[in-house]
Length: 284
Image (tube, rainbow, N blue to C red; front, side, top):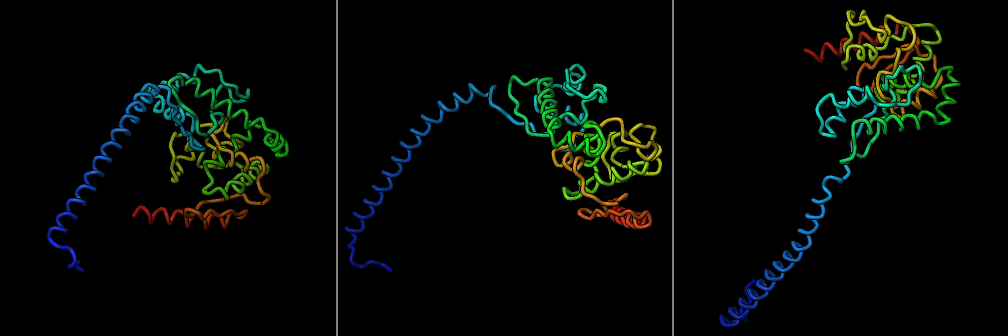
């Protein structure tokens, strides 16, 4: 609502006052920016001087295969592809005799610091040392003894659990299936081990795939594969050392979040048929 009390002269004076206040604000803002700039520029210079030593982080996801770890390190350190793989062949890892100098399973998935002094060999050693610290813990060694397997075999089982389990809740049951099948002299028949042999990741395993000539083909060979098939994390290792009790011999993930465990082959066949039907529909 207009204020009729102000005369034209008063309005002009008021306008000047407003302009004067606005002008002072602008001047103040310029001064502040100048001060900020004076502070920021030295900071930029200082940070620039420390650019080369600034710490970065490399995250190795649970289940990564050694080949994937090598590629991740190459990228993190901005070195030529294949550099870390070559470094691994010359690295001095601490591994079980059964590993036969293969570090698969002993490059622990975690977040690692990376700076200008980091080399492929030093980073791989860090991962290997971390794995050994975790795997030498009492609960791991005691769990392995309780299950009648070695720590290395526990890591192999954990790596399969990591690759096969659809959810964290499924891990223990997958581990129990593995132990039950081993106890009964059954072949493990795990698609994940074939995927490892063929250097791929897929849900589709054909009959031809199950005839793959590889010691990692658990459709053809009884027992565990010769090495882990990836680098398992804490949860998978926990599942391998302390799986829940159960008679399950089979499982299939029919749909995300829907993994069905059973001790009945007939029920397993029905579940597999449903899985195959869903896969076929998804491709149409």
